[in-house]
Length: 561
View 1 (tube, rainbow, N blue to C red):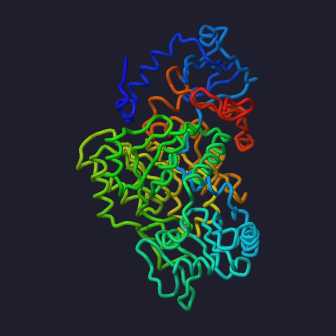
View 2: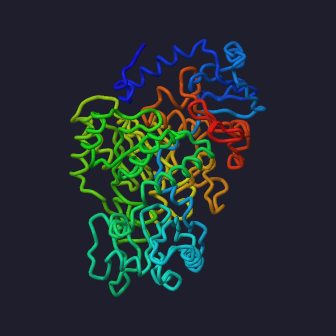
View 3: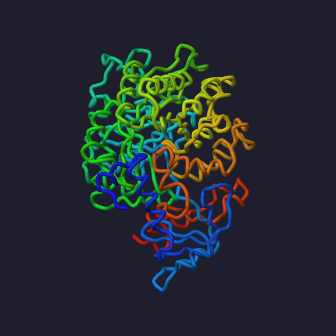
């Protein structure tokens, strides 16, 4: 069976599905290039079973089980003894801001700042290593760690007189600026707020240095853009970091084309090593359609065809859109980033063009409206395999939970957020609204498909921390040893499935990824402990020993690269 290049590039539910079938037939009886033996192998289907070995040929899985591996081995087969280690499908992270996270690997980390003084100290120390006038970025600060007071430019000004500072809150929905950065961006008391954003001001109307959501664009355009070489170097660091955590693929759910273009350049150089599914802004659906018509949907290393829209803000920034006001901000219900009519039109048009669409929804009203928008588009355009997604699906009304299954909308959630926000979420929305917060088990019980991700760099690019969060629900402050909202705990099997097979489905790659069986891509992780056999409290101590992508070991001792 032969396929044209155009068919191979087409992806989606057609061309590449045929390739997977062809590969499955091809794999049977093939002489193995590499055999991993003496292992416990979880294929990703059902409960785990000891299969003892896995064989690879031509970058795909060709044999599972000791007997099949032995039968297909030859003198040329490379034999690797895993010493009883645990093998499972490689992790996919369904929601990352990959390039942003990659930059932060070499930028100051304010996540550990637990007071305004510590915040200022870290910023000041980082500024010492910069040239005068060079922007200091990075961040991941969390005001909840010191009681909730937002950073002020006065904290940074004494230690950064010649360094413009723009450091982001860990949720990426706020920037903290010093006075020099405000000046360079042209922001003062006379600067009006922008639609979908907010300039925080003091009692006299002067900017404090905090910009929320769309207002962040006011300073971003003043910051010198990194070169293409800078972007590629950062992406390489991010790839190495992800591979060290057993991640074989990420979905880059972005609101621009920067990551997309960077990954395409790396792919042209043959330097990806990890797989990517690229999302670009929903408003640019026509540009994406034209790209696909001209070049297809990429390949299994860098694919595209998805669109992302941010509909509301975040809980931490009090910009997520709710029906009722925040308990700790009675005059605030959050706000939409875009007009609903515009979102509906973009969704209708992009869906009619056969593109996948995901909408960022945090607040309960935002999620309801996203579901309504999807329902209207599906009714207008007719039946097809859409795989609509809502990113975060964070705070849901009880009526919204069954709608995910009924409408076949994927809930793309981030379990680490539950154990992070769980420290203070009740202050924002109260106990009653928490009943629909991070409702993973309720969604699964209702029959919805639940995909897992990190939102890196908002949370660690480390699926094992996400697995622990979903199974244990223990907040990071240690205050909930029995689990925060423990009725929403899920099983190990459900958590791992969400990070593997469901994520493959959520990215239209379930015909070749997410499971270990003959014909599938040889993407898997080797761990030092059987996740189904250990005490769940020890999930976080589990180590990734090797990460194999496309049949080559990309991380671990004796890597092939």
